[in-house]
Image (cartoon, rainbow, N blue to C red; front, side):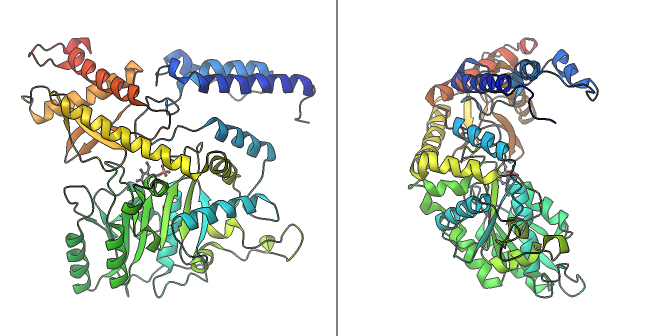
Length: 491
Ligand SMILES: Cc1ncc(COP(=O)(O)O)c(C=O)c1O
């Protein structure tokens, strides 16, 4: 009833859609990095539920006019905000094929499960996890972290994971989790969601390189133990969101082992740097993690969304999520064969065929080329840092560990802290609105900084130059001149 009445016409329109998307990717540089949608565009999305259908060609036209131009801009080489992958044309096609299959990859006897299992096996090998380790693809690292922490909670003696009751009796045992103060907020959110509360998280100070301070961590663990609190979870970051710092994962694994804690690694974007030969040794210790959360949609350039969790103890992982519902019973043959299923390892029962675009990406490019792209992003970050250092009006605000550069405009250095923060926030907004580059804002040591995360495989040296030029131009025109002339009204 919903298939096309005219398949030839549908096919022609489908080809036009594909051509438009290929064109938009091929000529991405000709567009602004980002442009805000004005009110007339936003008003387009206020109409009510359509009662009657429209022609596909008209919908295509609407998409081209009202949707395509107003994305975040992360496909563009000038996009450097937050940590966004750029996607690839190959990934786009894989996504189309997956949608064509309309596979529900929660389970059952279908080949899509083998594709996902292969992707997990590749990652298990890449990260040096044992064969018994399990994994599941997720919407992203936030969801992967939640799955990992539910499993970690079920590892606590007294938690009855097998019965699906992992709640620890808080009267008998008080748990503590440890992570650097730079850890991503998804860890605290997961702790909250699993009912332990953010309060169990001890934010540990960082050293000057923004890595977790190991002595401070050990001190906190000893203090907790002395007061009867059980060290339960240690989280290491393989690339912090603010500065890209990599914690000393080997040392964290040893501390976790010594105090009997679960060792989780947040490798949202940095874990895939394992593919870059010069960076891989700095991730040493990742192979000792009890769980690892990571994304393919960031540095892996797989179209959104695609993340993954790996868990060393596959049995505990499965026991934490598998159910014995009558309608999900397994068989040795037929459609209900092939257990365990992905739904036994995560939150979703119905889930899409995310693995296909990951599988296509690794098959199309190979791990070596993806590793080379990651190395290239890191080299660009170093080049940007050098450019910042030679500009007297700019200053670096953090060591560059991977692909993230934090800097700010300081003019002649005479601005008070609060004014300088305000100025840098304005500069970021102005640069974003210029369409020339799109860095984002963060705070380091309570100071507002311009943050450029070089994640996009299309970014090159000309984009680095454009960011610097746009930053200086915004600073001069917008708000403040080194000469002392205030031209804030131009902003
Ligand atoms: C270090 C780190 N951890 C976790 C996350 C959350 O990942 P996601 O957005 O895939 O849920 C991010 C996102 O940028 C991140 O950079």
